[in-house]
Image (cartoon, rainbow, N blue to C red; front, side):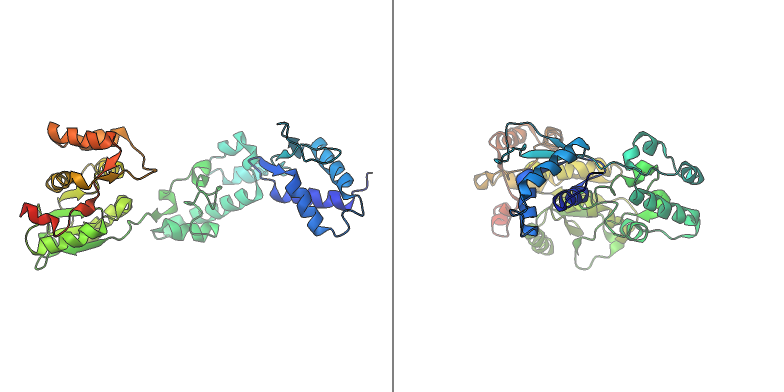
Length: 357
């Protein structure tokens, strides 16, 4: 049997540590050798590079590494390709079929049959934890998704944060379980609001949602001076796109009845998207653009500025927003769009409002 030297032991250990069960990883050979040299004081005395070369070749033969042939080499003799793929970790242990049968009264294992690379110890542990919960779920209370995620999987963001927990976001879909079966609820995020002085909750009928904090405070001043369009009884600070997550919180606070919701945001691609998605997501609510306020913003065309970089310019949302306006107004809006310009809500101040008083 071949005697494994210290260099090969170190290299194999490093490769095992970075191997992923579902995807390949790119490895820079020079970076790996540099780490070895830092660990071994006698690297050069023991002719470390020759042993390193043999270890890489051995790992390639074993199928752990695959060279990337792009005419880039490590600059040593004998030479090695500069980059290698660290191949997917082989899954030696597959799940016990009898164990799966015992849990099949709750779960559909067809995904795992088609994708055996997901049959890991970690995934099986999650499934067992979920199974235990489902056995007594009828006796459990409804809690937040974050609370249930922490209870079952050890972290409150496991089921939602696909970046920090790449195995978590699709876990329920893989095992065929819905969020409702977890007895969870997604709470709407709280928002800041201002109720007109002297009004009670049961008297609220008209609600104005504004995108920006500055105009939220301006709106409060205008409301108390009885100068604000639509004369709303309530003003909500939408906080940009956050309102899309927090809008449902409204119905946790205020009485269940019909309301008139008016939305005012920036005249830009992001603003068009926010109002359009709110209307789409809550079709039973009467939500519409605050046209009187938007028209005042259009009169401040001289204060337009550059569209923010990175904004998704969705034509569907643009057209849905434009159709609320007259043909003449649509021409102005289209000119802004083509020039990649926008009118921020901050053009509406107590001072500029005087021109419409």
